Image (cartoon, rainbow, N blue to C red):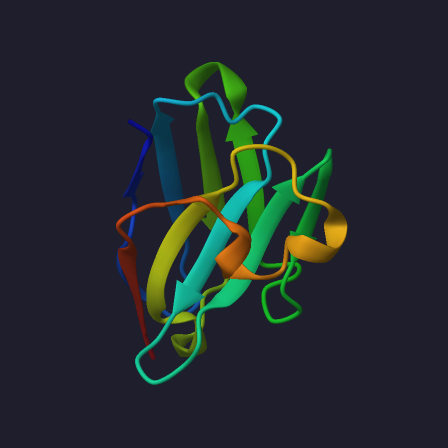
Length: 125
């Protein structure tokens, strides 16, 4: 059974940093498309950062502030969140597809097979 377990969320002041982790089990995601989405109440889930096919992709709103990384030996990936703003407050979800998605399909959450339980990030002003 595949499981994605997130950790690292919390409360931070504006300008601060957090590091989210997503530890996977039950399937090796070393070559799979994987990354992070986020959602706030009343809004649709949005892509934050994705790794696929050797490349990173970021939402415009987080470029230059967030960084996705991975440790294939641990089957874990991370999201470093720097220079946080209150607009970054959301529940963050890690997600993965069982293999590599083609580029046109990486943007939609519906194309991901596995999801973490979500971790709350709250940024105070």
